[in-house]
Length: 310
Ligand code: G3I
Image (cartoon, rainbow, N blue to C red; front, side):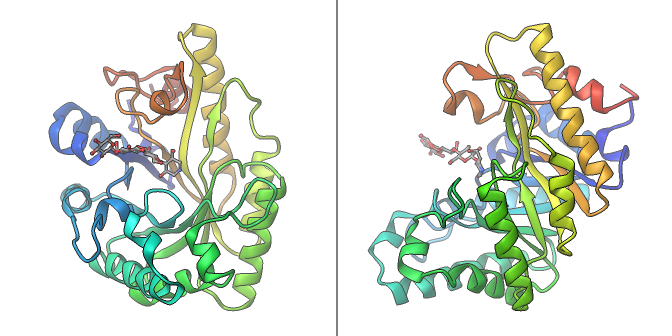
């Protein structure tokens, strides 16, 4: 079969667990064959990189970068500032110390891989579902301007990286996607270097497919930015049945086709590619089987649906 990465001009990616990449040959080999881009599932998050102030652990992030260099893979950087998985020591800082810490973090991480990361998720999940700013230490202590600052600092550290805002439940027109739309428009009017909007698209077959998904991607593209599907998966309530797998295939196909149809959609990345390594069962009790490949790395109906040569 033709691998997914050769079916399209878009980047086709997967989130990767650094430990699986290092320890599991079969996992690495299917990843290498099928995908053109990788995203660190956890290894580039602040709490992993700098658990204690000033003490960095680059092992996981470097392992992913080494793999990418060796195999000519593009890399999506994930994520510079997020309200989750940031180190505990941030909580004790004053506003001005926190501001320096954020600047220093962004500068250090983006500099380290300068020229090698195609796109960075600079800020992740900064809005509530009602479109208000999410309460986080960054929002509380630094105020609304922190997002513009984060983008400026990232751009200074690597002018060649495309800088994204990324979020979930934004596939249709709603208060949150409208808030991102308004923010991106206003940042760009102010000359802030925002280049893309990431749509996580963690979907479930127990809910309907996001209405107007493709036209929603298009309205963001019309702001003059790239759009990307950054964390796709489609979970289901276990046990797996043929009919659930068919619905899952429908959802994956619609995501894939929407990205193909929108010229500024540049990337289709899944949040893990195999049910062997997926965040879903750890987070949603009784749910799983969300990926394109099963636990033995065999393609599932969803894979066969988006790959006509399969
Ligand atoms: O590495 C530690 C290990 O040392 C420790 O013993 C163990 C005990 O709990 O935890 C391990 O860390 C876990 C980590 O995944 C690595 O496996 C964390 O507890 C766990 O919370 C963490 O979950 C990650 C989650 O983000 C955190 O919110 C998932 O793997 C990761 O898939 C998920 O990814 C997020 C994206 O970054 C943003 N969008 C949503 C997406 C899904 O939640």
